[in-house]
Amino acid sequence: MKQIYLDHAATSPMHPQAAKVFAEALGAHFGNPSSIHQTGRNARRVLDESRRVLANSIHADDPEIIFTSGGTEADNLAIFGTANAKEGRHIITTQAEHHAVLHACEELEKAGYQVTYLPVDETGRVHPEDVKQALRVDTILVTVMLANNEIGSIQPIAEIGELLKGTGVTFHTDAVQAYGLLPIDVDRLNVDLLSVSAHKVNGPKGIGFLYQRKNTPLKPLVFGGEQERKRRAGTENVPAIQAFATAVQIAQETMEDKRQSFTEYKELFRSAFEQHAIDFKENGTDQLPHIFNVSIPGIDIESFLVNLDLSGVSASSGSACTAGSIDPSHVLVAMYGIDAPELRNSIRFSFGIGLTATDITQAADKTVQITKRLAQK
Image 1 (tube, rainbow, N blue to C red):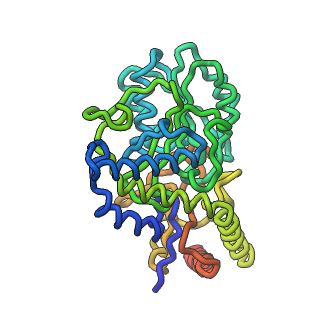
Image 2 (cartoon, one colour):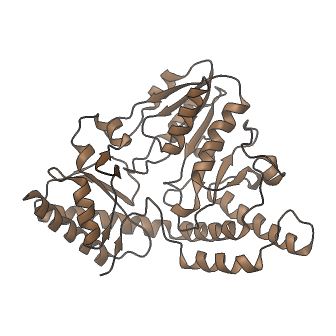
Image 3 (tube, rainbow, N blue to C red):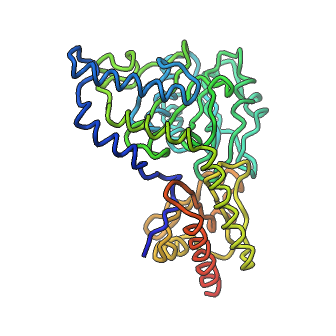
């Protein structure tokens, strides 16, 4: 039985071309890019070329890219690096951020910082005016994700960045889920720091970057050598970086085609639900094209996901399934409240490379069948 993978928002398979580049680079570009001999210089050339590709993808300058081990480290470097570099003890974020941001903020609270966790509305979006009202004289950082990884809602980042101009407050956005699917221009977004991870755009795991606008205060978290202009010590993973750049080039070239295909995939799901009179509600609005998060009344999400998996469909929910219990999605809690039924019956389908309309039609049909069967129990 073919497994239809609909969990690309969690991680994506490597693009075959990126995987080929990665495998070849393991042998061809094993040198330390800090070494001055020919082997090291060859690795440095690949590193510099890849950095240029990634910088161009967000309309940044090459020196503004800091390679990290992924999105989590990039978020942590943005948050702790800013806190360690600036005076002031107040940070603003939202209740619906990725845990890489939320848990970092919680650690700073333990160290005496104050964090304002702004609410989101039922669409999953924060209001720029709420950010403005939360600003204080000791605010050093605002961190708001570009688009949510669970429901796909796109945040008003450019508007928030505009109101922060001239305040001296550093503005960070976690763009991990949006990168490769939305055009990103750091100047138009008005951001100072931006986080990205390769494995969400069909690159390898274990590599990402943090964009740091020139002259934005930031202290390193990792100490050792002088790599990445003394901002992140450690020998750069050149094969992974080159594969990352390859995946990003492909993502940039195919962005519009993917957006169109993923929008069609959502419509196939909607049509199947409507044709079979399935009661459903979409969670979020102004969404990324590849995320379809839907609440289906009357189902138990844990049983639903198990049945989907047994039928050959890989999907997920905003909940973390643990032994005998489900922790509610903090994103849905922020949107609807702790007692909302959506916390117990919402599922996320997310699309990516390798899928066809036939796959989606089959997955939608199986979802309908399972819904009907479980509703009868």
